[in-house]
Amino acid sequence: MTLTVSPESAARLACRASGLADRSLTQLHHHATSVFLLADDGVVVRVSSDSQQRQLETAVSLTRWLVANDFPATEPVDVPQPVACAPYVVTFWRHYPQPQRGAPSAGRLGDLLRALHALPPPPVSLPQYQPLTSLKSAVDSSTYLEPSEREWLAARREELLDTYGKLEFPLGQGHIHGDAYPGNTLWDEQDVRLGDWDEAAVGPRELDLANTFQGVRFGRTSAELDDFSLRYGYDIRQWPGLPVLCEIRDLHTLGSFIRRADQGDAGAGRQLSHRFETLRNSDGQAQWGAA
Image 1 (tube, rainbow, N blue to C red):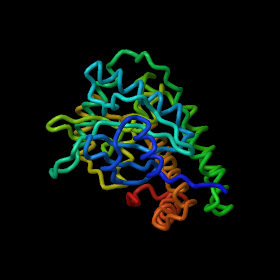
Image 2: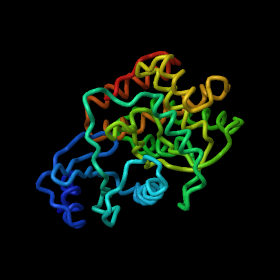
Image 3: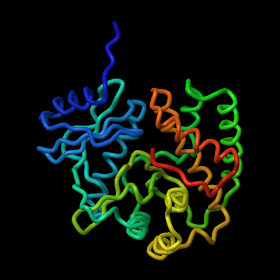
Image 4: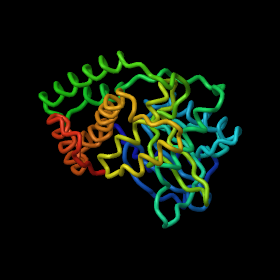
């Protein structure tokens, strides 16, 4: 008989293995990753697929180095990690309670990325950025997608990769966050920290800027984009490759919804269908929901 391990069970097992009491464990949210809080210890417990083991090892090592060098990354807890609990891998992070005044602005992310890109290369082996790799895996293994949808996504992915390979990047290559957008910033009292380092890599610096501009699908305003550009010190809208990176980001975001729809999440399936239709109809202005 095969026993199914839930994300919560994996979180509790990993807590005990790391010497953390799990009695105050509560779920915060679930998307691509299940996130729990140990309220008694002020620890966030992230439960990810064990296919991300190497990425999470890198994320923990990188953020420890960043914090030691005074960059405001979210801080991993000082316990041995990641902890493997097949089919999951678990990491532990300091909890930053969020105030009621709203999320940090896009401009604050511009400040963070300017500081991140100015740092010397970290003493951590980062992978080379490979666009749309995780999407390919999600599409190929999906039981939810129709054959015509799978075919269209595969073809569109190849088109975008071909165009991406011909781009010239004026900001050059270096260490990047890989998933930088305002939703991955957190208040730390009056300061702001940058979290979710699972996709850290070496790649074109423009990648860390484009995601914020793709956010027009979620209501981001021109004023926010102006502030972000001013505080980073470069306006990527002057570069003709921006639409390509935004379209790659559009496609990339489908991966987590495909995986959730495969697991029977009806809400994810509805949002996936909406996003897919807007992409297939080349509707670059359509608004998307978060879930």
